[in-house]
Image (cartoon, rainbow, N blue to C red):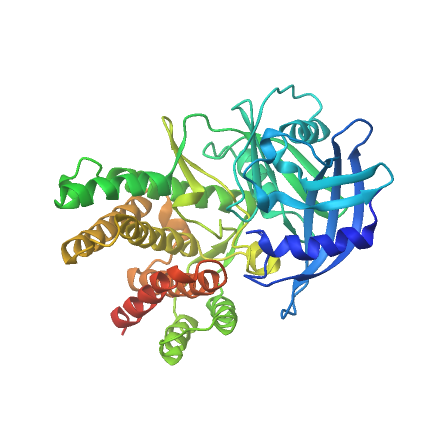
Length: 445
């Protein structure tokens, strides 16, 4: 239907504009189409699944990406196309005339068709696109189902599908119930879960708490939006998640040498400006010699406030895919649960700093001190909630000093990862993780 060479040329310009493409702000990509499958033909619109192998100009790593494309006659005046130039691929010639090619995820009719392809028994009427500011793409149906389209593919089970299913099988209730999976050959393409109606993500709730704090200019414990109770409950739920992961996937002895190797590899992938890398290496070297690292188990791997939702019945945990810029093998490998603890602790710092940026140009020393106090109060509450959960000690180092060192090493590793992420996607924010690295190094002997 579409000339594949013309489509590949159009995608070479389209892919670098997408948040989920691993290429930063490259001007173009090298693209090879590996497969093209028509999922809905006949009357307009047409739905096509395309897999491509692509890399940004100037990069060496090639990755496989999934695109679901809609085709409509040129001149279509559909309301969903308005204000979404980033979703338009191109106008291309076909055997049915020239068509507009676009991201089908924004088309309610085609996303319903895609859901029926995955789960024929589900009858839905409305589809709501959740936006593209993430590593995958999500669509909500009738406010009861949510479909996640995986964009960057890897051979083998997608961790989000794999872990969500396994947690449900061992009775962990704080994940969204799986409904359907779309898998073919060695790739997972999409996942459908129950939608958490009335839920609010943790990062948005943290920002509300901080806005109230900055407006009132009082100690965090006295602010009406104090977040500490929620932070403590989130800590308890996180420990329960790790115990369930240990049950579902088992545990192995912790391998601090391997963890440090991964950290060193991540450090080599990032340009750290103004940081003494030798001091970072020193922390990782101390990790290698630790006496009691605790067990290793399957972990979330990209744990932060944006990956959790609070509902009337408590916290729910989402998106077990891991950090998309790390190799899949590393993301699926057992690790210390303190890696997730460190990720959530880093998220409290991010929330406080992002909220300061929202405040505008009138940020003063008092507000900066309140940001630090809010972060400290909630990280302490979160860790206390975790440590206080029944059975949590079974997945942690037995000695507090060892636990703190493992957590610090993973916090440092997370901040290094964040530097690389911000350099590629939000250069104006790179000072947030850089400040954390300096602070961690100053506090670590």
